[in-house]
Image 1 (cartoon, one colour):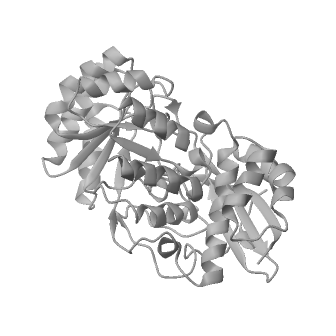
Image 2 (image 1 turned 30 degrees about the horizontal axis):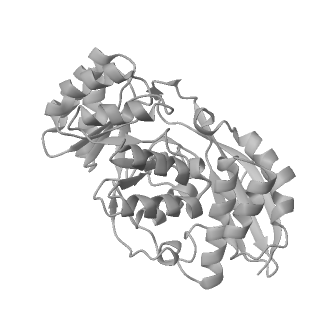
Image 3 (image 1 turned 90 degrees about the vertical axis):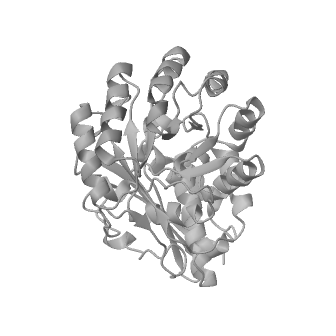
Length: 360
């Protein structure tokens, strides 16, 4: 059970809608790095990282170069179950490179599940369940956001995420109109993507609190953890950290400062499932809930996120959003599905289509 081969391929999937946040307009397509790890018995595991350069500083091409030139030599010959040792070796040759490492880590968990003929969620100690999913609204006119929110809730989505953070007055109006459109039974959360100052965040949250908001995600820049704590003291809306949490050390700092109520976990931020588990257990011990947020993954990454979200018990809908927005997914399609449930196949239950995928 030793690693014999590590392969990486960059693919691209078109977006089926336009999408805007405080970072600007998203591109018309999403790139993905697909990794396949083969052991000495020719059993394979596959993993994915869908880059968000403004989060981790990595593009898909950078990830591919990192994997092929730096990480692969450190991986060959290692036992497939020695994931902690493998992470230590990867950190020793390249740091942080969390996106590239997350694809490798995912492939190792898939390979481990296949060798043991066990779904990954069972390897994680979780029970199978049906997890509700979110539909995320990109920044638009309040009228258009309300119309789309109503459409998606009629399709079965019980939670809507509203992108804000550009224009406070417009943001307040968008939240108001979305709440009026979907009614009181639908859960709403908002995400400012670092777009506010502390003062603006407190003002906006004071205005939208009446609309029963589950939480606000990353209202201020990632470095302003003191600002998160100050906002939390001035509002009844729970606070989530996303851009502010990449590592266990980040989690400890946020807990120490009493800055947040939730952690947003993206596998590309924390180098994969192995490190995400450490953050989750620390959060659990501290009374902090976690939500898995997908960076526009294919079905492969979606299943990986879905398996780890089987552990989460806070009752929040998970953000496995990639299949809602991308097309030409080589690993299948589940557009507009409002819930996620893993299958019982080994690993992540996704067919190894590495050889047939067109990429570079």
